[in-house]
Length: 395
Image (cartoon, rainbow, N blue to C red; front, side, top):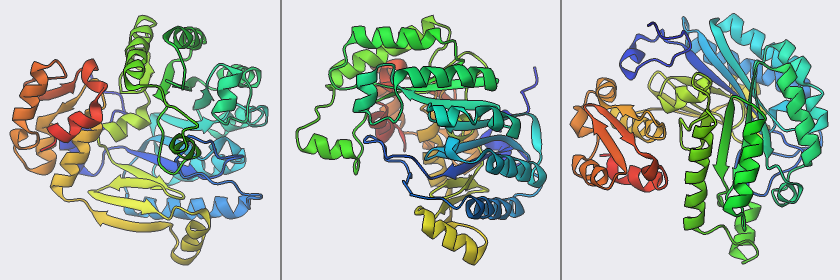
């Protein structure tokens, strides 16, 4: 059976330089900064929309000139809050991307959105612009929890936005944050059951983490916020996997759940270590064995684009051992795991030189990982301590 045209290439095929690409476009602006967020997001009193459209189009053209002959299998508008982007800007970027690269027949074009009534009013126009998948940041189905998370919307407004999204877009994903302070298994079970009943094909379900530099980190350091203890959070993680699997949307990655065939194609390119382009402030890219990073601060990005025709801050060749380590750390997030033979083809190293075989055997004996031939997978029990396992596994 042939693979669909959007399918990320095997690592062994990447040297052909003609496999489809993924494109990430960053819109850095938000109405407010959420207390848990460490993403590159900024609050500005005013945004010159024409200036930003032109800068992003220039940055896009720079990447296109370096990747001739490739097609795009996915575009992802992330942020920040890209649903604050004028639909005309989204349309211009999508049209330019199609002109530069061309699209695979079933391209996935995703936009992250906040569920406010103002942004929901733009959904029909964004769909007309070419967006065919939306990732909606509901984050919680409880008004006190939304206040705690610093969200600008209430539950009723969020549910109305979800209904609008389901009418406007062919594919809808929702985001929720769980393992909140004081959250019980019963509370989360009821919230998740309600979320599953909405019928969306995809759910991104993230445990609340206290990230350095955030408002929540300050509150935790002051003793004003007490995170859920590790054991209870682990119980909620296992409960989440069981409930989503029973509802036909099993986990395919640590925090992502979907009906079979409805996985995020764009994110699969990251996790399978395909080539992707990053455009806009703070955007990362991996193309042709090089890592790119754009200027993070919006004003610095604009200045660099005006000066150089692109917003790149740094561009570095990735040595084979770094590519192998990155591919392992990304691929082992997936339930499917990684094919060590493909990694060997990418790096020129033997499969048994990519991982610490002694550590793999020890972890397998504890039911945390499994290896069958060249296929290495982290088992559900291991996903609970994935970061620790990666430190042991990667040679």
